[in-house]
Amino acid sequence: MIKPNIAAGIIILCCLVACKKGDFLDKTATSDLTERSVFSDSTRTMQFLTGIYADIGFSFNPFRFGGAGLEAACDEAEGPASASASAYIQWAGASVNASSVTSDAWAVCYANIRRVNVFLKNAPNSPFSSSLKTTALAEARFLRAWYYFNLMKHYGGVPLIGDTIYSTEAPIEVKRNSFEETVNYIVAECDAVTPLLPASQFTVNFGRITSGACMALKAKVLLYAASPLFNGEQLATTEPLRSLTGYPVADQQRWRKAADAARAVIDLNRYKLNEDNTTAPGYGFYKLFTLRKNDEYILQEMRAANRELEGMWLPPSRGAGDGSNPYLELAEAFPMRNGKPITDPASGYDPANPYQNRDPRFDYTIIRNGSMIWKNNGPKQPLYTYVGEPQDGIYVGTPTGFYINKMLQEDIVPNNFGQTQRCFPLIRYAEILLDYAEALNEIDGPVQEVYNAVEAIRKRAGLDPYELTAGLTREQMRSAIQNERRIELAFEEQRFWDVRRWKIAEQTDNKRMHGQEVTKNGGVYSYKTIDVRPHVFRPAMYLWPLPQGELSKSPELIQNTGW
Image (cartoon, rainbow, N blue to C red; front, side):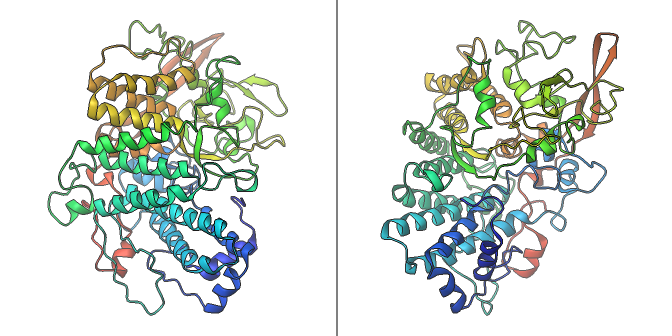
């Protein structure tokens, strides 16, 4: 697959037969000649489909808002250039509005939905073999469903345009479909194309859609649909907004549908956690993100060989240091190696040695004072963030005292010549296990299957013991699952959406965030909590506002509550 830097010729072809990446109301104008020239050639037809994959990870992208992604728009991390009016700062400070909100979700998704429709119209006449044609059309339909899911999590119910390709003469009349209609459409598309796609993709097709990805997307959509934000607890109390932004009436059985869909993925026995606690505790968790091919990724955005995350997240002494920095709140969410939270008196946590005996995922996710980090051509050397350290120290290289280590390859740094084969995880098996545990706990309580799913992840993490406390209540298990998602899926785009669908962002994202000041006195380090940024959250921010430009062009659209 040609990713992410698609060859210039492919980009030109895509632009010729699809709309520009402007907004939903930029109509597609194509000529018969253009379409014939592309879809009469099998190579060009496949290149066109490949082009639709190019934006599949736009929402996940850590570069989405320039120097940061959604991690800096929630309680995970402080973004760079904090004095500017960047998109992530607008979300953190609640200054975002319909006129200033980034319109990339709306524009990118609808541009690609139209590309899919152009492909579905023309590909049946392409010189593909019958089997390849079936698979390619199914891939395109999945991609359309995926882009609709991204619209759904941003806005709720959105216009479903079917197979329509707008012409330049078509009047602009689009209405939002209900949330239920949006969910049903995505689920139906996943069900329809699942049997048409292969279980695995190999060689040059690796990274293309599989039947498992369809099933995993269905599970993810149904989990969102069952969650409080959409399951009868939406902000809107009157129609039509109530039905546009969620189900008018709550139904706990929606959790059953989500649990069954996640269980179906598990029962494929096709995916597994990347586990290796022999090399080092939790090493499989680290190694997973450096592997281009593995048995845990279900859907991924393919990348060319790169060191892009290392160039953004590593400290200045390693040639980087221009990305987001984790908040102390995230650091303190990681338990001790024995699985107990640091607030538990029996955990063994020592405030004077806060990094000792922590969950192995801590050091694989966060760089802190004393972390051993590769430099130049190696070997690993300690990294210091204490006050007065001229490059990496607090107030100099980092505003929080921490750097991000998640998904980085330990022997790749910007000031050497290495590259990694890493790609971006969009859905992975660990998430499916957590989806299953969450949904099943909500409908059946903390039954053994819930324990099994969560404990499998804790075991892979290298916790010892990895078992959860027996006899948890539904509420206690819910808290355990939510924290497990927070640390297992950190910096993978999940946290921003999770606190919204759980409808807890008014607690998690409506407070001052903190960092850790480290001071050095001889060979002794002292640790102090410092203020970093006050985050503000308004209830309207549970959903994104539709871009004002779209509302101006289409009076049939209805804005979300509070915007």
